[in-house]
Image 1 (cartoon, helix red, strand yellow):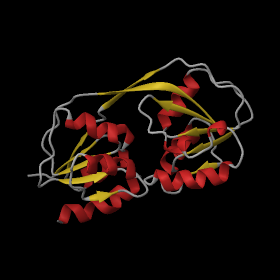
Image 2 (cartoon, helix red, strand yellow):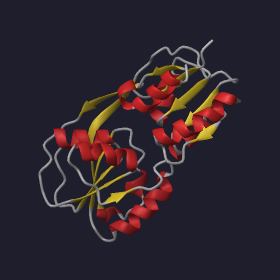
Image 3 (cartoon, one colour):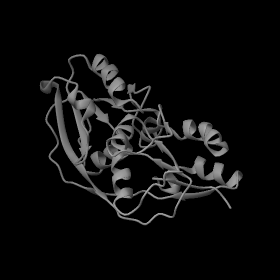
Length: 222
């Protein structure tokens, strides 16, 4: 019987993982458990930097007609940076360790200095980066709404969750068996899993598909 792996991403968002599973005779269930909808917002007045915590925050920021101006751009990590380049956005700050938002936020604070930062965000945003800055340097707006989807997922040997919201959506109608391995996408998802008493097999430090694929063989052998 094939080993079945679940990841809370759409197949088109994890092409390299799809290829890895095909090459290694693994069954992949790739399903995002979130839905997103645009929120009309009034853009904040003057600011110097836009920080994107995800590609979606950039997409909805741009969809709503954000004004073109001379700005600096920053993002949480390299995966988001790669996607932003496809939208024509060049980031001057890219987090080195996306899986550890607290550490990356400290580095971001040093880089920001006294500049004002605009945070386009989800209604479920944890606000890790904005909370570390003095409030007179922070402007933020909800630009999209995240909705949890209840989907029945077949039993898997390995579960990979990319966000706390995806984990919550999964657990609304599914369970993780004790014998299954649980891989989580960075500190925020780790904390959520620990809060509800789940046993974690591995935490992705850089929160990237490359890191996941490099480590997957170890979990398949145990």
